[in-house]
Amino acid sequence: MPVFPPPDTPHPITLPDGSLHRDTVFLRAVINHPGWVIGDYTYASSENPPEEWAHALAPYLYPFSPDRLILGKFCQIADGVRFITASANHRHDGFSSYPFAIFHRQFENAPSLPGPGKDTRIGNDVWIGQGARILPGAQIGDGVIIGAGAVVGGTVAPYQVVIGNPGRVLRPRFAPELVARLLELRWWDWPIAQILEHEAAICGGDLAALESAARESGQG
Image 1 (cartoon, rainbow, N blue to C red):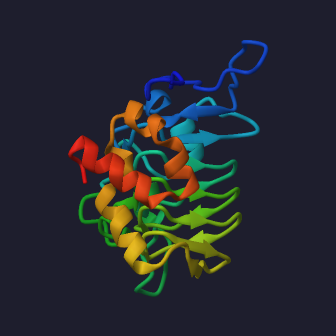
Image 2: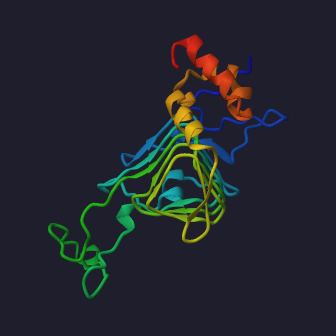
C-alpha cells in the first residue's frame, strides 16, 4: 500500500530527484490563523508560492475578523484562487459605500461599516479551478467542481459543476440518488489507509465497491 504524507506535511509532493515540490502545500500545515478552519489533506498550488498562504488566498480575512473561512477535507485549490470573505464587504444600503471608520478608527457602532457577515464554507472534495473567486458567505457543497475563472457566491448544492461570471451551475455531476448515497458514505471521513485501499473505486466511480467497503468496515 502506498505511503501517504500526514496532513501536517507542508510540502507533500516529492519530485523524482528527491526534492520537494514547493509549489503545492497542505494548507493545514502552513496556515496558523484564527479565522481559518482547514480539513485534512486540503491542498493549494501556486506558480509563485507566497510566504503567507493565508493572506494570498484570503487577503481580507484578518485575525480580528468576525467571520471564518471553513474548508473541508481533500479540497484542491488551483493557482490564483481568491476567497473574498465577508470582511471585505462595504455597507451599500445608504448613500455612500465609503468605509470612513477604517480611517478615523472609531470602530464601535461605526455607521459606515456593515455588520458581521456569514462564514464562507467549502465542503469536502471540492476542486476550485485556476483564478476562481469565491464571494463572501458562499456555501459550497461537497464534491463541487468550480471552473477556472468562475465567480461564485450563494449556495451551491453538492456535486455540481459551476462555471462563469456570475457563476452558474452547468450540470450536476451525478444523478440525485447517487449524490445522496455518496453523501451518506462520506468516504473523506474514512481513515486514510482505507481511502488508499479503495482509491480505484473512489476515483473510478465504483459505487458497489465503495458500498462493500463501507459495510465491511461498519461505516455504511
